[in-house]
Length: 112
Length: 111
Image (cartoon, rainbow over all chains, first blue to last red; front, side):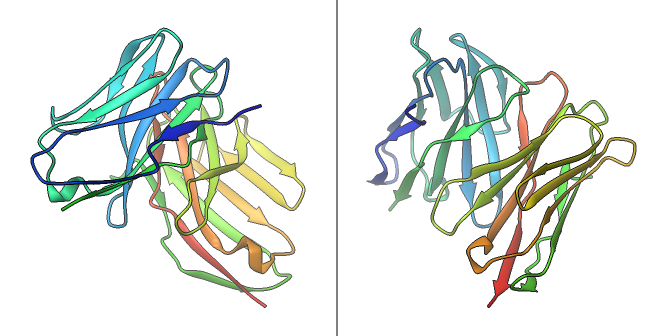
């Protein structure tokens, strides 16, 4: 059974640019969550999608957005990149809420 | 008050010893609890989950949950150097669909 797939694995962007990250959940999983991980802040919740609906959003500026498609694949977008957006972005999929979440390999974003 | 708290460590134990990792949470409505292991430069890997009060054992790992005290722990028996990693406690808080993580405890197992 294939795991959670995130693309790309690594990205280098310049301040002011925008970026789109992709996540394909485990087959049959309908919930996709996104997290930002930095050494100082740990894992910070960005948002969660279920059946194409955003059900919860973390405390991040509006520059961070996401969506989910009918096949449960999800994308997150960060516009007007700042140096502080450099982080590991992790996607996790769950079958339904309250069940185990499985993480993808992550996308390492570096903003220069 | 932080939602999920863990001792940051580092926690250092000798090979073969029991490592004990602790976590407290603030939301009494929390329903499910998870332990993840994260090696440096890698993504978190689920190692245990527990939904009911009491103990749950899986191989060398035991998760313990006490909802009255809002406390969850992970015991690692016969610790191995390969267990050296950061251990993250995660709590599903009620029905808000959000999995909240502690900042993790760095465990080092010395040969």
